[in-house]
Image 1 (spheres, one colour):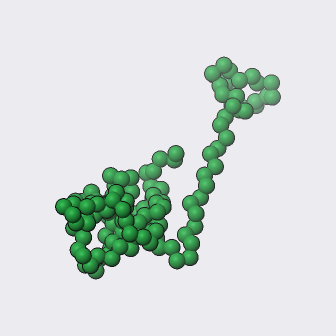
Image 2 (cartoon, helix red, strand yellow):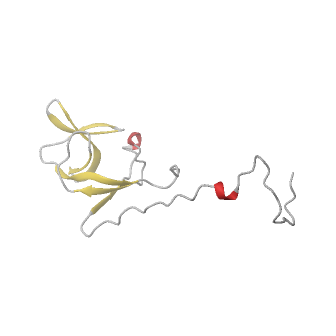
Length: 127
């Protein structure tokens, strides 16, 4: 055991110590790009897409185009905005989520597709 008081420059690291120059450099994280002017950002409120790694509070940057099968889509109908995985079932458009499948009516407005996702920081692994 080594004393922590008065360390001298002649201390030699023990064989199981890590040499200070062998420590990995801290990982530099690039910040997510800031949303451009006019870009829509939608924040998930419920736990509808947790199985896809999107906990409540995740921010979705929306690309305003019509969704393809398997993409996370944001759709407005019945006075509410809904988020789910766009799919087809029996020839009709549906949104699938952890809470089930919802048929999309013909008058549904497709707001867009999640182009970039920024998950919440609570409980997320650091990488």
